[in-house]
Image (cartoon, rainbow, N blue to C red):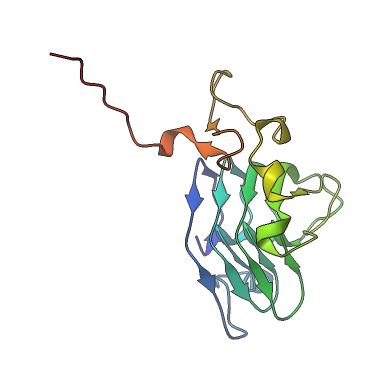
Length: 178
């Protein structure tokens, strides 16, 4: 998504995203929203929930593993891809948080090992950077809705995978013995 003005829920991206000039981002009516580049969305004004990105992100300014530039809330989401910003505001999860005094990020995480980023855009409710080992443990994601929780969105293969969206898993067909 270049620019999110709506609602993103239950989504993921594994794409590598790159911008090599000053015209990165989605464009649109608001110039200050044009610069972001992220694994899931370049810039976002709307909420993002139960989503993740795994691809690498390369750009100049406002580069984030999940979102490059955000004014919208992000909850129960994470990123794992490498983040490379050649200018300013490179962050593991978010490159630039427009309203850092407003609690916009809740239960959000990024992999500090794979992203190469020790920090992310900070705010009242900043996201949490974790090493790869911790990112593959259910206990690290305390408020994610896993497996048997009401309205569950996530599952995890403990110590073997990052959280996975249940809706994105392929169906399993069982054929009874004849």
